[in-house]
Image (cartoon, rainbow, N blue to C red):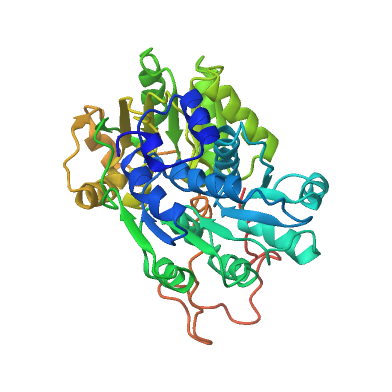
Length: 442
Protein backbone atom coordinates (compact mmCIF):
# COMPACT_ATOMS: atom_id res chain seq x y z
CA UNK A 1 0.00 0.00 0.00
CA UNK A 2 1.45 3.33 -1.06
CA UNK A 3 -1.27 5.76 0.12
CA UNK A 4 -3.31 6.17 3.30
CA UNK A 5 -6.45 6.22 1.18
CA UNK A 6 -5.72 2.57 0.30
CA UNK A 7 -6.25 1.62 3.96
CA UNK A 8 -9.97 2.40 4.02
CA UNK A 9 -9.75 5.08 6.70
CA UNK A 10 -12.60 7.56 7.24
CA UNK A 11 -12.53 10.70 5.12
CA UNK A 12 -12.17 13.04 8.11
CA UNK A 13 -9.04 11.12 9.18
CA UNK A 14 -7.55 11.28 5.67
CA UNK A 15 -8.19 15.03 5.64
CA UNK A 16 -6.35 15.42 8.95
CA UNK A 17 -3.43 13.31 7.72
CA UNK A 18 -3.13 15.50 4.63
CA UNK A 19 -3.04 18.57 6.85
CA UNK A 20 -0.28 16.92 8.91
CA UNK A 21 1.73 16.37 5.72
CA UNK A 22 1.48 12.56 5.81
CA UNK A 23 1.82 11.10 2.34
CA UNK A 24 2.48 7.36 2.57
CA UNK A 25 2.20 4.92 5.49
CA UNK A 26 5.36 3.62 7.14
CA UNK A 27 5.96 -0.17 7.13
CA UNK A 28 4.43 -0.66 10.58
CA UNK A 29 1.40 1.43 9.63
CA UNK A 30 0.86 -0.47 6.39
CA UNK A 31 1.12 -3.82 8.19
CA UNK A 32 -0.78 -2.97 11.38
CA UNK A 33 -3.71 -0.78 10.34
CA UNK A 34 -5.66 -3.28 8.15
CA UNK A 35 -5.86 -6.09 10.77
CA UNK A 36 -6.56 -3.57 13.55
CA UNK A 37 -9.50 -2.18 11.57
CA UNK A 38 -10.80 -5.76 11.48
CA UNK A 39 -10.67 -5.90 15.29
CA UNK A 40 -7.65 -8.20 15.60
CA UNK A 41 -5.21 -8.12 18.53
CA UNK A 42 -1.68 -7.06 17.64
CA UNK A 43 1.85 -7.62 18.91
CA UNK A 44 4.21 -5.00 17.50
CA UNK A 45 7.99 -5.14 17.90
CA UNK A 46 9.04 -1.63 17.03
CA UNK A 47 11.19 1.19 18.33
CA UNK A 48 10.07 4.77 18.64
CA UNK A 49 10.40 6.70 15.42
CA UNK A 50 8.84 3.98 13.25
CA UNK A 51 5.40 5.59 13.19
CA UNK A 52 3.71 3.22 15.61
CA UNK A 53 1.59 5.91 17.29
CA UNK A 54 -0.32 6.48 14.06
CA UNK A 55 -0.35 2.70 13.52
CA UNK A 56 -2.63 2.26 16.54
CA UNK A 57 -4.28 5.70 16.75
CA UNK A 58 -5.73 5.76 13.23
CA UNK A 59 -7.69 2.47 13.43
CA UNK A 60 -8.94 3.36 16.93
CA UNK A 61 -10.26 6.70 15.67
CA UNK A 62 -11.75 5.05 12.59
CA UNK A 63 -13.73 2.64 14.76
CA UNK A 64 -14.92 5.40 17.07
CA UNK A 65 -16.17 7.34 14.07
CA UNK A 66 -18.01 4.29 12.74
CA UNK A 67 -19.66 3.53 16.11
CA UNK A 68 -20.21 7.16 17.15
CA UNK A 69 -21.26 6.10 20.62
CA UNK A 70 -20.89 8.68 23.37
CA UNK A 71 -18.90 7.35 26.37
CA UNK A 72 -20.69 7.19 29.71
CA UNK A 73 -19.50 9.41 32.58
CA UNK A 74 -16.31 8.18 34.30
CA UNK A 75 -15.50 5.77 31.44
CA UNK A 76 -13.27 5.71 28.37
CA UNK A 77 -13.78 3.85 25.11
CA UNK A 78 -10.05 3.41 24.45
CA UNK A 79 -7.15 3.33 26.92
CA UNK A 80 -3.48 3.86 26.05
CA UNK A 81 -0.85 3.16 28.72
CA UNK A 82 2.52 4.91 28.39
CA UNK A 83 5.59 4.79 30.67
CA UNK A 84 6.28 8.53 31.01
CA UNK A 85 4.39 11.80 31.22
CA UNK A 86 6.05 13.20 28.10
CA UNK A 87 5.19 10.20 25.96
CA UNK A 88 1.60 10.22 27.25
CA UNK A 89 1.23 13.88 26.30
CA UNK A 90 2.68 13.27 22.84
CA UNK A 91 0.37 10.34 22.16
CA UNK A 92 -2.65 12.42 23.19
CA UNK A 93 -1.51 15.24 20.90
CA UNK A 94 -1.32 12.75 18.02
CA UNK A 95 -4.86 11.53 18.69
CA UNK A 96 -6.11 15.12 18.72
CA UNK A 97 -4.29 15.93 15.47
CA UNK A 98 -5.57 12.87 13.60
CA UNK A 99 -9.11 13.37 14.91
CA UNK A 100 -9.29 17.16 14.67
CA UNK A 101 -12.26 17.08 12.30
CA UNK A 102 -14.30 14.63 14.36
CA UNK A 103 -14.36 16.35 17.80
CA UNK A 104 -13.16 13.53 20.00
CA UNK A 105 -12.73 13.83 23.75
CA UNK A 106 -9.09 12.92 24.42
CA UNK A 107 -7.70 13.09 27.95
CA UNK A 108 -4.33 12.62 29.66
CA UNK A 109 -3.81 11.24 33.17
CA UNK A 110 -0.27 11.53 34.58
CA UNK A 111 1.38 12.13 37.92
CA UNK A 112 3.02 15.34 39.04
CA UNK A 113 -0.14 17.48 38.67
CA UNK A 114 -3.29 18.06 40.70
CA UNK A 115 -5.96 15.34 40.88
CA UNK A 116 -8.86 17.81 40.76
CA UNK A 117 -8.86 18.77 37.06
CA UNK A 118 -8.29 15.13 36.10
CA UNK A 119 -11.29 13.97 38.14
CA UNK A 120 -13.43 16.67 36.51
CA UNK A 121 -12.27 15.58 33.05
CA UNK A 122 -13.05 11.92 33.74
CA UNK A 123 -16.52 12.78 35.01
CA UNK A 124 -17.65 13.69 31.49
CA UNK A 125 -16.43 10.46 29.87
CA UNK A 126 -13.69 10.16 27.24
CA UNK A 127 -13.29 8.65 23.80
CA UNK A 128 -9.56 8.13 24.34
CA UNK A 129 -7.61 8.23 27.60
CA UNK A 130 -3.79 8.20 27.61
CA UNK A 131 -2.30 7.54 31.03
CA UNK A 132 0.68 6.48 33.07
CA UNK A 133 -0.11 3.41 35.21
CA UNK A 134 0.47 4.84 38.70
CA UNK A 135 -1.86 7.84 38.51
CA UNK A 136 -4.43 5.80 36.57
CA UNK A 137 -4.65 3.30 39.42
CA UNK A 138 -5.18 6.19 41.85
CA UNK A 139 -8.29 7.28 39.95
CA UNK A 140 -9.56 3.73 39.57
CA UNK A 141 -9.14 3.17 43.29
CA UNK A 142 -11.01 6.37 44.16
CA UNK A 143 -13.91 5.49 41.88
CA UNK A 144 -13.30 8.37 39.48
CA UNK A 145 -12.79 5.97 36.55
CA UNK A 146 -14.32 2.65 35.46
CA UNK A 147 -12.86 0.41 32.77
CA UNK A 148 -15.73 -2.07 32.42
CA UNK A 149 -16.83 -0.54 29.09
CA UNK A 150 -13.36 0.06 27.61
CA UNK A 151 -13.19 -1.76 24.28
CA UNK A 152 -9.55 -1.16 23.30
CA UNK A 153 -6.33 -1.08 25.31
CA UNK A 154 -2.91 -0.14 23.98
CA UNK A 155 0.26 -0.89 25.91
CA UNK A 156 3.05 1.25 24.46
CA UNK A 157 6.78 0.89 25.26
CA UNK A 158 6.08 -2.27 27.28
CA UNK A 159 9.75 -3.03 27.90
CA UNK A 160 10.27 0.40 29.41
CA UNK A 161 7.22 -0.21 31.62
CA UNK A 162 9.10 -3.21 32.97
CA UNK A 163 12.23 -1.13 33.62
CA UNK A 164 10.16 1.30 35.70
CA UNK A 165 8.54 -1.43 37.77
CA UNK A 166 5.08 -1.03 36.25
CA UNK A 167 4.45 -4.71 35.54
CA UNK A 168 2.28 -5.32 38.63
CA UNK A 169 0.22 -2.10 38.17
CA UNK A 170 -0.40 -3.02 34.53
CA UNK A 171 -1.76 -6.42 35.54
CA UNK A 172 -4.09 -4.71 38.04
CA UNK A 173 -5.35 -2.36 35.33
CA UNK A 174 -5.89 -5.17 32.84
CA UNK A 175 -7.90 -7.11 35.44
CA UNK A 176 -10.44 -4.25 35.47
CA UNK A 177 -11.07 -4.46 31.72
CA UNK A 178 -13.89 -6.47 30.13
CA UNK A 179 -12.89 -9.84 28.71
CA UNK A 180 -14.20 -8.91 25.28
CA UNK A 181 -11.82 -6.22 24.08
CA UNK A 182 -9.11 -5.46 21.53
CA UNK A 183 -5.52 -5.56 22.79
CA UNK A 184 -2.57 -3.77 21.18
CA UNK A 185 0.89 -4.45 22.56
CA UNK A 186 4.05 -2.60 21.47
CA UNK A 187 7.59 -3.16 22.70
CA UNK A 188 11.08 -2.52 21.32
CA UNK A 189 12.43 -5.68 22.99
CA UNK A 190 10.78 -8.79 24.39
CA UNK A 191 12.25 -9.91 27.72
CA UNK A 192 10.65 -12.91 29.43
CA UNK A 193 8.41 -10.90 31.74
CA UNK A 194 7.03 -8.85 28.85
CA UNK A 195 6.52 -11.96 26.70
CA UNK A 196 4.53 -13.50 29.56
CA UNK A 197 2.35 -10.39 29.86
CA UNK A 198 1.76 -10.40 26.10
CA UNK A 199 0.71 -14.06 26.23
CA UNK A 200 -1.80 -13.27 28.98
CA UNK A 201 -3.26 -10.22 27.24
CA UNK A 202 -3.36 -11.12 23.55
CA UNK A 203 -5.79 -13.40 21.76
CA UNK A 204 -4.51 -14.86 18.46
CA UNK A 205 -2.57 -11.67 17.68
CA UNK A 206 -1.19 -10.43 14.40
CA UNK A 207 2.58 -10.04 14.82
CA UNK A 208 4.34 -7.10 13.21
CA UNK A 209 8.10 -6.63 13.48
CA UNK A 210 9.50 -3.81 11.42
CA UNK A 211 13.12 -3.75 12.63
CA UNK A 212 15.35 -6.07 14.62
CA UNK A 213 15.41 -5.15 18.31
CA UNK A 214 19.04 -3.95 18.34
CA UNK A 215 19.46 -2.13 15.05
CA UNK A 216 20.23 1.60 14.95
CA UNK A 217 18.82 4.18 12.62
CA UNK A 218 20.56 3.94 9.25
CA UNK A 219 20.54 7.70 8.75
CA UNK A 220 22.37 8.44 12.02
CA UNK A 221 26.06 9.29 11.64
CA UNK A 222 27.63 7.75 14.76
CA UNK A 223 31.05 8.38 16.27
CA UNK A 224 32.80 8.02 19.61
CA UNK A 225 35.23 10.45 21.23
CA UNK A 226 37.65 8.89 23.71
CA UNK A 227 38.13 11.52 26.41
CA UNK A 228 39.52 11.86 29.91
CA UNK A 229 36.67 11.77 32.38
CA UNK A 230 37.57 15.14 33.92
CA UNK A 231 37.56 16.79 30.49
CA UNK A 232 34.08 15.69 29.41
CA UNK A 233 32.28 18.94 30.16
CA UNK A 234 34.90 21.03 28.35
CA UNK A 235 34.76 18.73 25.32
CA UNK A 236 30.97 19.07 25.35
CA UNK A 237 31.26 22.87 25.25
CA UNK A 238 33.70 22.54 22.33
CA UNK A 239 31.15 20.45 20.45
CA UNK A 240 28.53 23.18 20.83
CA UNK A 241 30.96 25.69 19.33
CA UNK A 242 29.93 24.08 16.05
CA UNK A 243 26.69 25.79 14.90
CA UNK A 244 25.65 22.50 13.30
CA UNK A 245 24.61 21.37 16.81
CA UNK A 246 21.52 23.49 16.50
CA UNK A 247 19.12 21.20 18.33
CA UNK A 248 20.76 18.51 20.46
CA UNK A 249 19.66 16.13 23.21
CA UNK A 250 22.43 15.39 25.71
CA UNK A 251 22.04 12.19 27.76
CA UNK A 252 23.35 11.62 31.27
CA UNK A 253 22.81 8.67 33.59
CA UNK A 254 21.65 10.58 36.65
CA UNK A 255 19.41 13.49 37.58
CA UNK A 256 22.23 15.32 39.39
CA UNK A 257 24.46 14.83 36.37
CA UNK A 258 21.80 16.29 34.06
CA UNK A 259 21.48 19.41 36.22
CA UNK A 260 25.25 19.92 36.39
CA UNK A 261 25.78 19.49 32.66
CA UNK A 262 22.93 21.88 31.88
CA UNK A 263 24.33 24.48 34.27
CA UNK A 264 27.80 24.10 32.72
CA UNK A 265 26.43 24.66 29.23
CA UNK A 266 24.45 27.71 30.36
CA UNK A 267 27.57 29.14 32.02
CA UNK A 268 29.34 28.89 28.66
CA UNK A 269 26.62 30.57 26.65
CA UNK A 270 24.76 27.50 25.39
CA UNK A 271 21.03 27.74 26.01
CA UNK A 272 20.09 24.59 27.88
CA UNK A 273 17.48 22.97 30.12
CA UNK A 274 17.50 19.73 32.11
CA UNK A 275 14.65 17.25 32.18
CA UNK A 276 14.41 14.34 34.63
CA UNK A 277 12.20 12.65 37.20
CA UNK A 278 12.78 15.26 39.93
CA UNK A 279 11.38 18.04 37.77
CA UNK A 280 7.72 18.95 38.12
CA UNK A 281 5.38 18.31 35.22
CA UNK A 282 5.22 22.02 34.41
CA UNK A 283 9.02 22.29 34.45
CA UNK A 284 9.34 19.32 32.10
CA UNK A 285 6.71 20.66 29.70
CA UNK A 286 8.33 24.09 29.72
CA UNK A 287 11.76 22.60 28.97
CA UNK A 288 10.33 20.57 26.10
CA UNK A 289 8.46 23.55 24.69
CA UNK A 290 11.55 25.80 24.83
CA UNK A 291 13.59 23.12 23.10
CA UNK A 292 10.95 22.43 20.47
CA UNK A 293 10.60 26.14 19.67
CA UNK A 294 14.35 26.69 19.44
CA UNK A 295 14.66 28.86 22.54
CA UNK A 296 17.31 26.43 23.84
CA UNK A 297 19.89 24.47 21.84
CA UNK A 298 20.40 21.65 24.31
CA UNK A 299 17.98 19.44 26.22
CA UNK A 300 19.91 17.52 28.90
CA UNK A 301 17.98 14.41 29.83
CA UNK A 302 18.07 11.12 31.65
CA UNK A 303 16.82 8.01 29.89
CA UNK A 304 13.64 7.81 31.95
CA UNK A 305 12.59 11.37 31.11
CA UNK A 306 13.47 11.26 27.42
CA UNK A 307 11.84 7.93 26.61
CA UNK A 308 9.51 8.43 23.69
CA UNK A 309 10.28 12.12 23.11
CA UNK A 310 9.38 12.76 19.48
CA UNK A 311 10.70 16.11 18.27
CA UNK A 312 11.34 16.64 14.59
CA UNK A 313 14.50 18.56 13.81
CA UNK A 314 16.79 17.12 16.50
CA UNK A 315 20.15 17.42 14.72
CA UNK A 316 22.35 15.62 17.27
CA UNK A 317 22.28 13.22 20.17
CA UNK A 318 25.24 13.48 22.54
CA UNK A 319 25.87 10.68 25.00
CA UNK A 320 27.67 12.57 27.74
CA UNK A 321 27.79 9.22 29.52
CA UNK A 322 27.29 5.89 27.80
CA UNK A 323 24.19 4.01 28.95
CA UNK A 324 24.50 0.83 30.94
CA UNK A 325 22.50 -1.22 28.42
CA UNK A 326 22.93 -1.37 24.63
CA UNK A 327 19.15 -1.11 24.19
CA UNK A 328 19.21 2.32 25.83
CA UNK A 329 21.89 3.43 23.34
CA UNK A 330 19.69 2.40 20.42
CA UNK A 331 16.78 4.26 21.93
CA UNK A 332 18.83 7.39 22.61
CA UNK A 333 20.20 7.83 19.12
CA UNK A 334 16.73 7.22 17.72
CA UNK A 335 15.81 10.70 18.98
CA UNK A 336 17.50 12.11 15.86
CA UNK A 337 17.11 11.26 12.16
CA UNK A 338 13.33 11.29 12.46
CA UNK A 339 10.68 11.93 9.81
CA UNK A 340 13.12 11.10 7.00
CA UNK A 341 15.82 13.54 8.12
CA UNK A 342 19.45 12.78 8.87
CA UNK A 343 21.17 13.14 12.22
CA UNK A 344 24.34 12.51 14.20
CA UNK A 345 25.16 10.75 17.46
CA UNK A 346 28.34 11.59 19.38
CA UNK A 347 29.36 9.56 22.42
CA UNK A 348 31.92 10.74 24.98
CA UNK A 349 33.64 7.67 26.36
CA UNK A 350 36.20 7.64 29.17
CA UNK A 351 38.33 4.67 30.13
CA UNK A 352 35.82 3.32 32.66
CA UNK A 353 33.15 3.16 29.96
CA UNK A 354 35.10 1.10 27.43
CA UNK A 355 33.26 -2.13 28.44
CA UNK A 356 29.95 -0.35 27.81
CA UNK A 357 31.17 0.68 24.36
CA UNK A 358 32.16 -2.91 23.53
CA UNK A 359 28.74 -4.13 24.65
CA UNK A 360 27.02 -1.58 22.39
CA UNK A 361 29.12 -2.59 19.38
CA UNK A 362 28.45 -6.26 20.02
CA UNK A 363 24.71 -5.77 20.39
CA UNK A 364 24.32 -3.50 17.37
CA UNK A 365 26.71 -5.61 15.30
CA UNK A 366 28.79 -2.66 14.16
CA UNK A 367 32.12 -1.05 14.92
CA UNK A 368 31.73 2.62 15.77
CA UNK A 369 34.28 5.16 14.47
CA UNK A 370 36.53 6.28 17.32
CA UNK A 371 38.47 9.55 17.70
CA UNK A 372 41.02 9.78 20.52
CA UNK A 373 40.68 13.09 22.36
CA UNK A 374 42.55 12.05 25.49
CA UNK A 375 45.43 14.07 26.93
CA UNK A 376 48.98 13.39 25.70
CA UNK A 377 50.25 12.37 29.16
CA UNK A 378 47.84 9.74 30.47
CA UNK A 379 50.63 8.05 32.47
CA UNK A 380 50.62 10.82 35.09
CA UNK A 381 46.92 10.25 35.69
CA UNK A 382 47.44 6.52 36.00
CA UNK A 383 49.98 7.02 38.82
CA UNK A 384 47.40 8.93 40.85
CA UNK A 385 45.52 6.52 43.12
CA UNK A 386 42.30 8.51 43.15
CA UNK A 387 39.64 8.50 40.45
CA UNK A 388 39.42 11.55 38.27
CA UNK A 389 36.36 13.70 39.01
CA UNK A 390 33.61 12.91 36.52
CA UNK A 391 29.97 13.57 35.96
CA UNK A 392 29.28 10.04 37.14
CA UNK A 393 26.92 9.40 40.01
CA UNK A 394 27.98 9.38 43.63
CA UNK A 395 28.50 5.95 45.17
CA UNK A 396 24.92 5.97 46.46
CA UNK A 397 23.36 7.51 43.36
CA UNK A 398 21.90 5.09 40.82
CA UNK A 399 20.89 5.80 37.23
CA UNK A 400 17.37 7.17 37.17
CA UNK A 401 14.86 4.35 36.88
CA UNK A 402 17.31 1.61 37.86
CA UNK A 403 16.43 -0.87 40.56
CA UNK A 404 18.25 -0.94 43.88
CA UNK A 405 20.41 -4.08 44.12
CA UNK A 406 19.60 -6.37 46.97
CA UNK A 407 22.16 -6.22 49.77
CA UNK A 408 23.80 -9.25 51.34
CA UNK A 409 23.60 -9.48 55.11
CA UNK A 410 26.81 -10.27 56.98
CA UNK A 411 26.55 -13.53 58.98
CA UNK A 412 26.11 -12.84 62.70
CA UNK A 413 29.34 -12.85 64.63
CA UNK A 414 31.56 -12.97 61.55
CA UNK A 415 33.55 -9.83 60.71
CA UNK A 416 33.61 -8.61 57.12
CA UNK A 417 36.66 -9.45 55.08
CA UNK A 418 39.49 -7.02 55.82
CA UNK A 419 37.72 -5.50 58.86
CA UNK A 420 39.78 -4.54 61.90
CA UNK A 421 39.36 -6.64 65.02
CA UNK A 422 36.85 -5.17 67.45
CA UNK A 423 38.25 -3.25 70.42
CA UNK A 424 37.75 -4.65 73.92
CA UNK A 425 34.48 -3.60 75.48
CA UNK A 426 36.24 -1.29 77.90
CA UNK A 427 38.02 0.71 75.23
CA UNK A 428 36.72 4.18 74.69
CA UNK A 429 35.32 5.08 71.30
CA UNK A 430 33.96 8.31 69.85
CA UNK A 431 30.30 8.91 70.50
CA UNK A 432 29.40 8.91 66.81
CA UNK A 433 31.45 5.82 65.97
CA UNK A 434 29.56 3.40 63.79
CA UNK A 435 26.99 5.93 62.69
CA UNK A 436 25.96 5.41 59.13
CA UNK A 437 25.28 7.98 56.49
CA UNK A 438 21.63 8.42 55.69
CA UNK A 439 22.44 7.51 52.09
CA UNK A 440 19.60 9.64 50.86
CA UNK A 441 19.58 10.25 47.17
CA UNK A 442 20.05 13.88 46.22
